[in-house]
Image (cartoon, one colour):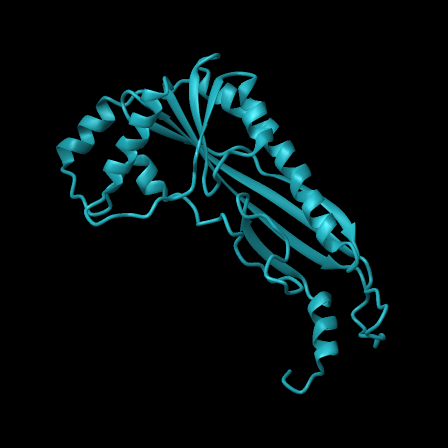
Length: 244
C-alpha cells in the first residue's frame, strides 16, 4: 500500500470497519487532531488499579489457612437505601453528573477523586486501600462504590466497495453508521471490614448516522446519550443487587 496516494489511503480508511476502546473518563473524539486518532485529555492520568483499590498484594504468599479463614468469614456486601456512599469514577476527578444524580435517588452520595496518585517507594496496594477506607470513614461513608467504564465503537461504512475519486475541496464521504457500546464494572467495598464485591451491569449500545462534516458532534452526542442511559440503569441494578 506504500504506492497509494494520501487521498486514496484516506478513502480506504473510511471504507474499512474500525474498532476502538476508550475510557468513559477520557471519551473525547479526535483529541489528537487526526481523523480518528486520539490523545488523552490534559486532566486524564489513567485508570485506578483494581488491585490497589481492593488492597490485593500481588507479591503476597497467602497460606491455605488464610484462604480458608477468608472464605469462612465472608459476608455479602449490602447497601441499604439511604446509606452514605463514597462514589469514585476511575480516571476522573469527579464522577459524571448523571451517575451522581442516579445514585443520589437511593443513597447519600459523597463524590471522591478517581485520578490515580503517584506511588512512592514502599507504597503497597493494601496501604492505598486502607487509606481509601479511612477517607470514607472520616466523611461518614459506610460503603465505597468504585466504577470503571469503557466505550467500544464499531463503524460500518454504508458505501459500496468501489472506490471513487472525489475533489479534496468540498468533499463529503458517504454517510457512516456508527454503533457504540458502553460497559461498566462496579466494585462495592464495605468500609468497616474491607470486604468487597464486584458487579457487572448489562452493557448498553446505541447507534447513529454521521458524515465527515459532523462526525465529532455525532460521536460526542452518542457518548452522552449512552452514558446517561447506562448510569440510570446501573444505579437501579446496584440498588437491586446490593439491597438484598
